[in-house]
Length: 313
Image 1 (cartoon, helix red, strand yellow):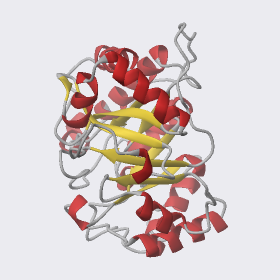
Image 2: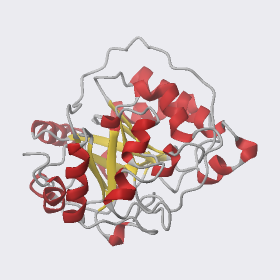
Image 3: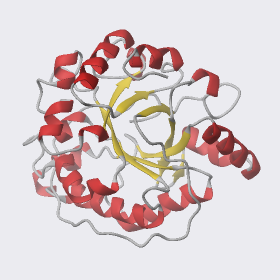
C-alpha cells in the first residue's frame, strides 16, 4: 500500500519458524480497544482542515488507521498526527475515544520493505511511537511480495513477522492496545505460499493479533474477489475457506476499496452489493466487520450501505 492505494499485486509467500509465548505486561495506560465487530477506515490522503477524518463524516466506523509509519519515521497522515502539539493530540484522542473511535497507526505499506532490519528493533521503535503519540495501537501492513515469493528466502518473511508481533506485544499488551495485521487475501490460501503465508503467521502468533484487515482487492484476474461468491465461498482464500483452514472467522475483517480510485488491480464491489455479501456472511456466522481504504471515498454513507441491516446502529 502507498500514498494513494493499498497493495498492488499478490505474489507468493514463505514460511517460518518461531513460537508463541506469553508476556508479562509492562505498566502502560489503557487505550481504546473496541469489542465486537470492527469497522476500520484508513486515512492516507490529506484531510481538508485537519488531520483526522471528521467524526460526523465517519459515523459508524470505530477504528481510524493513520497511514503510514515507516522505520525511518512517520509519513503522510501519521506524520501530520505526530506533528500536532501534544495537548491537541490528547484532546483529539479523548474526543474520538469518547465517540467510540480508536486511533491506530498503520506501519510499512507498499513503500517500505523492512525485513532486512532486525524485527525486534523495528517493533520496539514502532511501539514507542504508539506510546509517545497518544495512539490506541498499531496495524502491520507488511507487503514484501518479492521476498515472500522467493524460494531461496523461504520462511524469512513469516519468521520476521512472528518476532515482530511477539515484540510488539511486549510493549503493547493485549487488551490494552490494538494490534492488527493487514495481509492480502491470497496469503491465506493453502499452498499459495511456500511457507504457508499468513496461515503460518496465524498458527504462530494469531493469539497475539486482535484481527486481520484483509485486503480483498488488487488481485485480478484471479481470485478477483469482485462478487460475493469469490469473496466468501468459492476461492481458497475466501472468508469461509480461511475459516476452514483454522483461522478464527471473527478475526477476518473484510477489506475493500472505497472507490475504483483506491485500487490498482481490481476487487471493487459497489457498497450496496457489498452489503448483500455482508448479509450473506452474517447469516453464516461471520461478524468480524469491514475495513475500507480509504477516507474520504469511504465515509458514513459508504459504511451505511455496506452494513445495511446486518449491523444495526
